Image 1 (cartoon, helix red, strand yellow):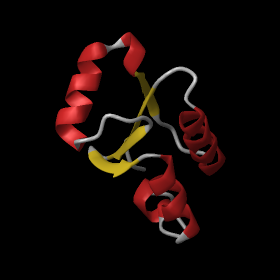
Image 2 (tube, helix red, strand yellow):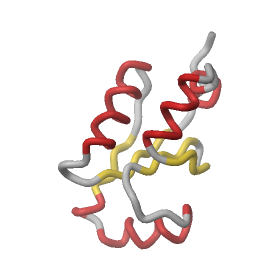
Image 3 (cartoon, one colour):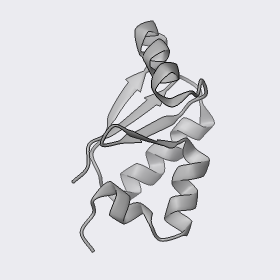
Image 4 (cartoon, helix red, strand yellow):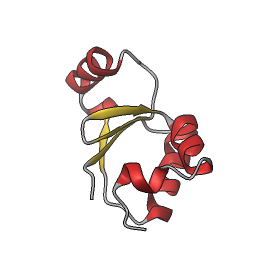
Length: 86
C-alpha cells in the first residue's frame, strides 16, 4: 500500500472531505497540521508549488487537493494510485 500524507489546517471543509474519502477507502494516512508546524508549510510550497490545503501526497508525489482526489475517484483511478488491491 502507498504512503499517503495529507497536509491540512483546522476548519478546512475541503480537508474534511478529503479525510472522509480516504477513510471510506480504508487507507492509512499521515495528517500533517500546518498550523502546528510552520516549517511544513514552507516545505509544502517548495515541493508542490501550492499554498492551499489540503495537499495530498502519495509516495511523496503530489496529487493535489480534494478536487483532484475526487476526480481520481470519479475516473476509477484512485484505488490504483493508493495501492488498493482490486
